[in-house]
Length: 348
Image (cartoon, rainbow, N blue to C red; front, side, top):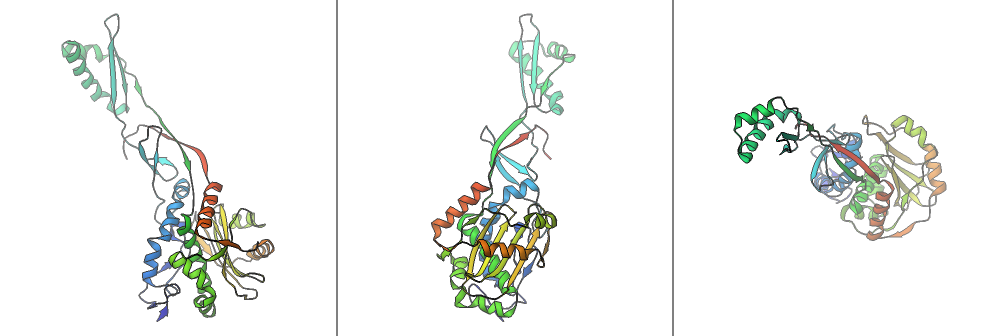
């Protein structure tokens, strides 16, 4: 029997639900059934993991990023200028739908029937029949005469384009999303070996575990990291422009630190525990485009050196400052004025 790292209850790893180390929605494929119990897995999946997943839906939609278990990128809902909600398929592609068909006519000063129809071109034949009946009824003209007048008349169809201008925003889901990121760091640390698993269970990690499990204030936390690692280009070359990185490492001054970089857009630094383990680091880096991942990467040592050199002093933190962190993340990743055109094609 194993002991769950978060709730401390005993569980059988043979029957436990597999936990994604990097969130499944972020393209994570590496899983474990040795660290947390099924009850905590389900609790986190419906709470903190769900908030983080929701926060990156628009980015996943934009780049058609599948989940770690190969599920397609999510559809999203946006509102147009007319305040109507519309479904957006992956790659910001509007879901095709049949627009309302409209027609208009008037009798000009010469007594000729002038017609304008808007809608999909496939609907024109049936619209002509409806229009003929309406003109006959309204103008008291025999239906045969109206049909004859419309028979050879050129009818103009307008394929109207609806335009949506909507900010595409990515965020980490507030406090819950940040708890999910830290959970991944703690699990990765505990997976390294049995000795580190014992350390993760110890009082040294009580604050960070309680924060993940119940949202308790953790006393100190590092803020959003806006800087790029010096070897970011090298990592991006190997793992794509939107790589996800979880790195847990030893800092001689501060103890066991964690560094997360989500979709290579924004990063956080956290202290997991006040203990030094000389020359220790463990990592998980993934390419969400092709869903490949690795835990071995020698070039990450340069990133660790950079992190240790640039680590700030810990700052007092509470839930309100965590919300501020999420707001900073959202501001740093907002794409304003993303225009999406909707054409009146039939539903598919």
